[in-house]
Structure formats: C-alpha cells, structure tokens
Length: 233
Image (cartoon, rainbow, N blue to C red):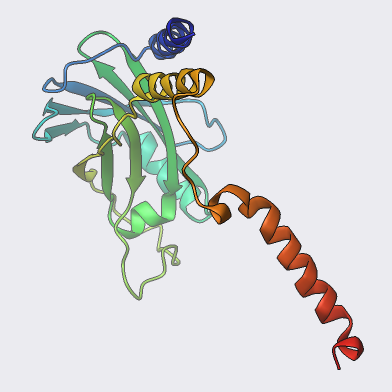
C-alpha cells in the first residue's frame, strides 16, 4: 500500500514537471542572467502591431542588478501618441523574457497614453523573480502624481515628447515550504496497520470521541427552547 501511494506521488510530481517543461519553463540555475525584450503598440486601431522598443538585462538574478537600453521614439510614433492621447486610448506593451537555456515567456500589459505623457514618458517596470530564477510577473506602471489629473487637457501643438525614462525594480518572491507528503502518508499507513493489529487504543476523552453527536443535540435543544418561549415561562 505504501509503495503504491509513493508511486502515485512520484508520478504526480513527474507530470507536474513535464507540464512546466511544456510551458517552456525548464529548470534554470538561480544565479544566472535573463534578457527581457520590450515591444510596444502605439496604434490602438492595430493593437497587435508591435514594434521593438528596447530590452532589459538582469545580469545576475541573485542580486537583481539590471540595465535597460531603449531606442528613441520614431517621428510616426510621436504623432500616434499625440493622436490618441485625447481619446483616452491605451498604449500596449509586450515583454518577452528570454532565459539562457532558450526558454521564453511573454507578458502583456497596457497603460493610458495620457498617463504616460502626463509623466513625460517616465515609467517603471516591476519584475518579480521566484526562488527558481524565473520571472513570474512583470508590472508596467507610471508614477502617481498627487493632486494632478492623470489625463488633463493637453496643448497638442506645443506638446514635445522626449525619450522614455524608465526605472527597473527587481522583486524576489519567496516560496512556501513544500510539505513532506510521503512521510505523512507513511505515518498514516503505519497507524492504520497498528489499528488492524489491535496495537493501539483510542485514548481520547468522551467529548473528543462523541462531539459530533453532542453538538447537534445541544443546538437542537437550544433552538427548540428559543422557539417556545411560553412553555419556558
């Protein structure tokens, strides 16, 4: 019985790792580097038309040291920013994580054009890395300006767009401890075999043994008494 349960646990674990491998998330050593390619879509009318914006390099996952390289906005991209800023349209961004072992994972996010322009293209990337060295989340945001409307009315004629000024923040997420399932199952199996041989006795108190019967009776008596106040008088 124990061997059968252990075998089932092993098979379940193997299937889990195979599923992760199918997602392109094979094991990666923790203190390694990772590259994140950035693409953006500046035309909401063609939301899936992404062009290269730049890349983030996390040179060591352990310390979270990173650098970012970005190109300047093309003239037609600046025109698109001005065109869609008054429509409260969304600027879309795609971040593709490329690991040293060849695995890739893509994250999609968005923010309003007006929010970006209001902060003069100052934006932030929050990159979460798990205990195995994988990027499990990328959050794209713009700094909040207290007391200022995110989307005010802009003077488009005098609006001058600079290049992106981006800050990258690395966050490590801790994994919860993995329960020792195999040892627990073996313990239950030993207790079951001992009960079958009559080696163990139930040493629990009366209430601990029969609480599931006592509690409903007490509740029933309480409810019956509350519903018949005249009889109680």
